[in-house]
Length: 88
Image 1 (cartoon, rainbow, N blue to C red):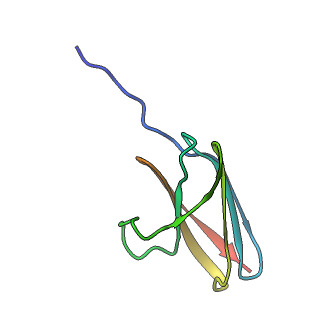
Image 2: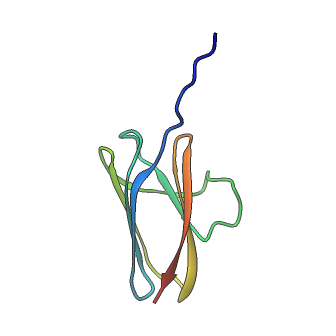
Image 3: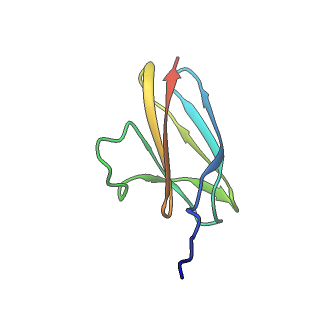
């Protein structure tokens, strides 16, 4: 007999770029704070910044970003997602 456990997911991701800035918001799988990396250089998330958590609604604001394509990574426990956004 096997039991299938669904993987935790990060949902409702909103990325709002500005001039050198990026505001991220999402719904986390739990109320535990997630971490965020901008333009990560490795898969190691131990040095990622901690997001602002209000229960499962979480957010992160990045500043000082270069214009053009920037990659973000959000990690919440075993759940991870990445995306690309164009900064003005």
